[in-house]
Image (cartoon, rainbow, N blue to C red):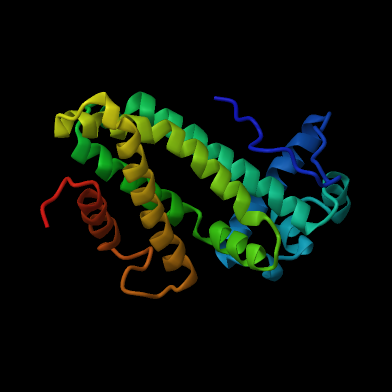
Length: 226
């Protein structure tokens, strides 16, 4: 599946499409190297262009032919990761039988499992994005935009399942839509907090994290008593 850009960057550093195979390979290597280094450090300030090109086996000149600066490079890496995440959501909706089950509890657990997986995969990238946002740079905006697209894919399925589980009329769909989105916001808020305040009792690496959040999410949606 081909990804489309999540948004148009205003920066003049927008990436130009390489015309030669060698250039395409070099670009792919730089983006992959940057992705790995950002994930490892979690802070763009700790990353140098020399680190990127050394790991990628390219050159400083090759970097600046594609990007104005390190910030522009980070934005492209971030956009690609968000687009890959959206492709992953579409893929699991097509192939995972849970998303065709109309089982509200199973769908609620799957939503939480998805978010925990995404935050674990992108811990360093998200941390770097949040740090840049604290410097008044709109890094986290692209993650929020991607999440809005994820919600348009996941929420209607869970709402339909909740309507069926409660035996509720379709007229309650709007109220349930709010419940689901508000509950997801709580889950995301805790995951963001776990990135910024790690270690903690619910660290991203904790085996307790996913089952605890799944229980909390079910309770928010009225799928558990108490």
